[in-house]
Amino acid sequence: MANSMTLKDIKKNNYSLIYHLIYQHKKLSKQEIANMLHLSLPTVSQHLTQLEKKNLIQKNGYFESSVGRRAAAYTICQQARIGIGVEIQKEKVRILAVDLRGTVFQQKELYLTYANDGHYFKQVSQEVQAFIDHFHFKKEQVLGIGFAVQALTSNGGEKIVYGKILDCTGLDIQVFARHLDYPCKFLHDAKCAATTELWMRKDIGDAVYLSIGTHLGGAIIINDQIYMGKDGHSGTVEHMTIDPNGSLCYCGKRGCMETLCSIHALLKKEESLAFFFRQVRSGVPSYVERWHTFIEHLAFSINNIRLVINRDFILGGHISPYLKDEDLQILHEKVNEKTAFPSEEPFIFISRSNEDGVPVGAAIPFIQSFLDSI
Image 1: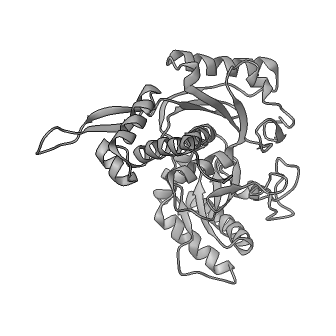
Image 2 (image 1 turned 45 degrees about the vertical axis):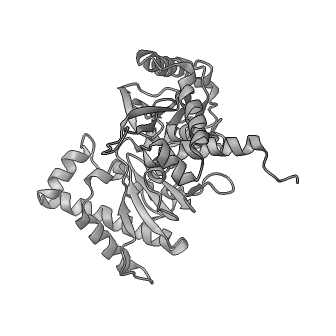
Image 3 (image 1 turned 30 degrees about the vertical axis):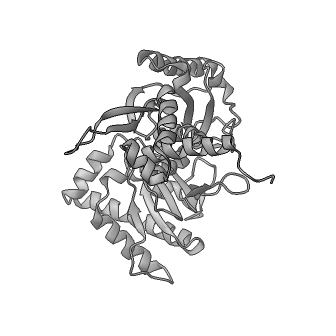
């Protein structure tokens, strides 16, 4: 039969099952693997040996035993392959090394002002290569480099298709890739943050992710996948019109959600989030008023989006570490005041990813592709 599995297919399948079982359970013995997969011990031993030779797994201690020999504990080699995430901002660049569990284990931050020229691209590329060299990562160890940008990118990550914040529309990934001998791609920063959220949580299903950073970004998650849409700009709620006569947005239109619900809209010049929220939590009236006005605009926007896609909302980005339950309670109340369909159940949640969500999310697609290939 054309669809029947060959012996080679079965072996490949068992090899994959064993690796992913160890990955899932973090530490297993040979006997546990055999029992869980209903395989013979010789078959398990053969595949464990192959995985060890490829440095994908290792023996990591022994299990306790009151009778007989203690069984060796097998774990994955977390740094057998790594992804590099690079977050490009107007005034700085962040470079992170991410292991096979999505954990950041090395990072570097540089204060470089973005410039749309060859000198800047070469300097950033050299810094990324120096980062790789400094930590002695082998070439075959690095799966790829993801460049997270405040811009919409082509589905394959080869080009920036809309980049007004950095004025980089049309930029090709080759500006970096020509200096780096690794797979490289561009990724939208808000989509990166949502990717990290999906990595950390396996129960999202459908949701709207709002990345509230210096600029606002969004992502629509359907069936645990980021929905890009026909032209790749689904989820760009930042350009939804809230006030047609409002402030000018960087997109050239007025009153976008960006102009009311981003950190740039919340803070005055030279203020930091930490300072702002210290004043809010201390009850300073002018700051409390600004915060409640911000929440009012956010509630108005969430209600509009929720009427189109009736799903949970996840609030991430730089603002998320400062949010408290009391803020979510006020936000829920304000949305319920505005909507035709109030809900007694909570539908707005704080992101579980930390401030590294964007650069981590730029590295994760390389990690995921590698894991899927085993």
